[in-house]
Length: 106
Image 1 (cartoon, helix red, strand yellow):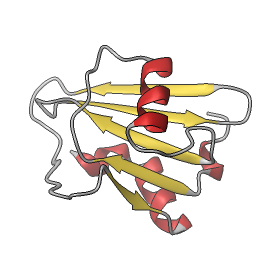
Image 2: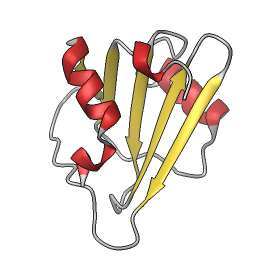
Image 3: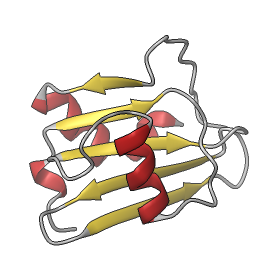
Image 4: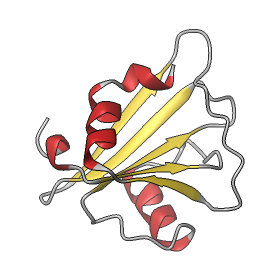
């Protein structure tokens, strides 16, 4: 995939989102709720209420990528209690590990 090697920040959204949202809805969510620029060199990771789905939103300079993962059984380990709307991970080495191994969340 183009542009995924260049991601410098990863935002883990702490609250579940409505998974009917697509690229436009999640981009608007990033701007209005998270007060963050969805066009930056970052990936935004969202989960649903049941924690069995992930959506990853990334802008690569030419357009948005929306990656969707749904588990057949089980849930993602999404144990975040934070007053902040997202957790930011930005050492480049951490982002590369997480992006290259999405199973890290399982």
